[in-house]
Image (tube, rainbow, N blue to C red; front, side, top):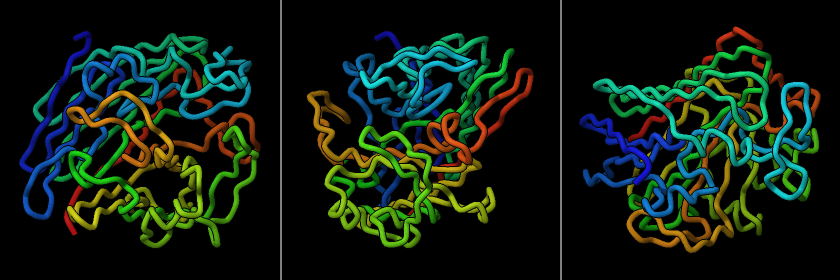
Length: 320
């Protein structure tokens, strides 16, 4: 086994991590009856080094799709066969072994990133802390030259526990009035559209199945968090009516990319032998707007030399 597994645990949560990709590998949470089960899709160990879908992985320097490959800061890999760079290519964070230090309730991963075609060295750190029912993720970065920087974590959630059920029965709420319009290659067009009257309106708790019935290809879209909301208010809530588990996410990032895994059928297995299949999990990726360098009004993801970036996302679990 060419990776290390590390665990943090308190009375409410047990979380395991991998140094490969600085991954959140498993999160064990109690249901309404007090039964603790894993609420992530966790690749069986034989498949971890073959992973190209970033299960639980840290993704960087830049998450999502970039519609051009050549920039002042980088010459990027086309890893899609469509002239697009996806998740910083095969040389991205998710495919690297990170150093780490561990304390009683925290673990901090570090990587000297000279990869993916970006100029200069970016010193990345990701700190995970357990606090009661919360898993707190803090991203730190500093670079010796100007660069693009838009990291995320790519965990796939299923609150039923040990993937007993699919996620179409979950309820999802996202405080977002706009979504990013995309073309047939899922590249942003540069337009932000109102969610009102679309299957992307999750401002009220919505059964995921109801949205998927109107989206034959599923959800693989970016929803823009309402700017009026402060960084201390949960902007995404996921609930499972059977286990009664909840996940509330608070973040200082501007958006969530949501991927419903619709049509994602594969031969690899997860969670002790279960084959990957459509709508088995929901990926929740907090980040800035995708393809931002190529669209006016999508925000600035340039990290200036010798300037530290700090981003925080809080995953809070509970019962309702």
